[in-house]
Length: 393
Image (cartoon, rainbow, N blue to C red; front, side, top):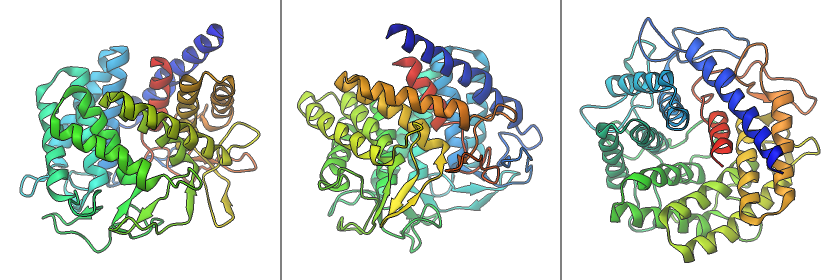
């Protein structure tokens, strides 16, 4: 067993170092305009004039900060510092606070809406930069963003967080993260990444108010978002927490199964943790409804229609989620699932010729070269985090 885990650790370390992070350091630095380019297409074509997304830049900051935290390669800290400086200079709104959704290739605001999902990712990233570098200004930035979310987005009457605001913090009519999402006031996805951000912040800032809200988020998941009949996550809700979606997202199921556990561990309440871990195993088991014989997990299902593409991020989260379930239960079957999914990734999802990972693989095994190799949603986050989690565990 020890030999298997040692080999897995070595393989993911090589993937992180020699492929994922090497790609982003070698191909994504924008030496003309600063920071990082906004897009490389799936066929390898760089789009120098592509807009630059807040999600992309926050995830770059998180990824290189986290890599440096574990590996201490000075090049990683250099990249993290580069990302931080660019974000502070271009994404932060000096007039109304918070961060923009999108800026132009030359650093000018394009979409100035305040999507709470994005604010949360900047908390996650700046906290990780503080953990890696000890830079107090990064911690203060994360704390300020936490206070902004609590001031504008938290719903004190019906609980939870609203989705999106105008530049000057008026709740928007169109709240969606993307066109494929339902236009609802509260979503699983935003709450998951606020949870993730608050967990990381609480590691280093033991504030009572933050602890209270982190606990509240954990309870929101186990009482409102996890469907008690199926143990899948419900995805979209109105302000009263009435579910408005029939979609099951297997990737979010398995991702949540370890992020909720992580949040409860960091919070440190043993009774809550015991309750949470039982539920997290049930969520992981439910995610296996999407598990395929080749070890991969398909994307989602809606009213019997199965979306069978194997998206890069879903496979990444499956490896971590299955490994976490193995740690919680000691059941060898979970480790076997993690290893089999990693084998699928290694043989299918990693782009050995062009670097990084393909956006997705079809049910027939064909790589999707139309999806970005790097872009607004294709970032060094899910796959680098998978590698770092495996190495740490």
